[in-house]
Length: 184
Image 1 (cartoon, rainbow, N blue to C red):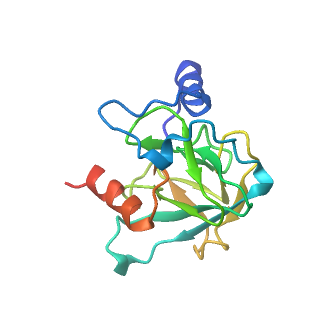
Image 2 (cartoon, rainbow, N blue to C red):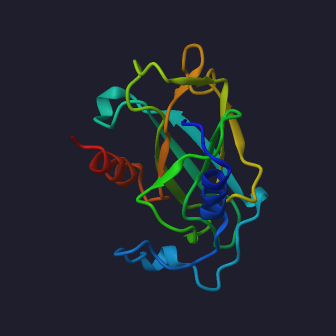
């Protein structure tokens, strides 16, 4: 990730902690994603998982599949933008499309899926390397930590300007958002 000024880091933090419920400009949120009146999920109500994406899936290279599952008996909401932090680097992955945080409702037993691009070009000389990532369903949650070994990555996790999709109903939809954003 590029070194950021204090103002840029503060802006990124504010983006993730904002509680606006409106959709990103020009996009309407799906009814199940609006979450009006739905309580926020507590950290112990959700399970977070992460895995690498196999090249044969046709997804963008260097992509992680992350999931958040509501393990409670009640519907609850996580933040529509996953919180993904790479080691001790300077901030979370940025959302695509850009937008404000807001609720993403998970019915009991349901899962939200997101695609995270860690690095565009593995040969980039500015590539950073970290030992782990932390993924959370909301900025207030402690999240789950995944090491390179957990993700079946040899050595360290390579990262440079990471981005994440919003939570989607399926990984295919999340991968499509990411692919559409980075098509040449």
